[in-house]
Image (cartoon, rainbow, N blue to C red; front, side, top):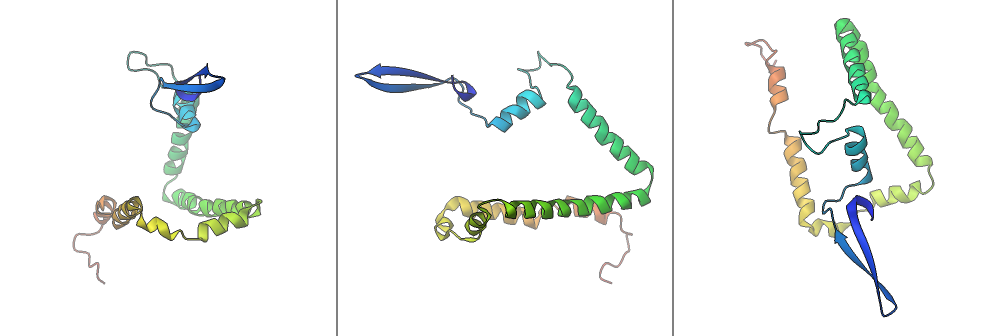
Length: 161
């Protein structure tokens, strides 16, 4: 048995070994996907077997809600301090990861691979489809968030001023 339930059966004919592959499970998963679904979430077969409570997830959920409670209970001033941290910390982490990545062996080859264009890829239809999807997302045709924020303006507010 190999990964994901695929069974390999070998046969020897005329001193040659042939492998017959029988797929018991057609859908294959990555190791990270299997870990997430089988260990972290501990998914069961269906609604007839609900499984137990995952105490690790309950503790994480409680910690998240406790952080939200303490941030909101102190008011707007505390939220301002939290925003300073949440706005600046990702940039600090990105700079640290950049420095770490540049210090690894072969970093120059990776940068050259990243910066060297592969012009033949422009002939692929999937590339143009992915570009169209990015344009669609960047134009934000659903603008629901902006409409919600705009609802907080005064009705007769002069936006052009």
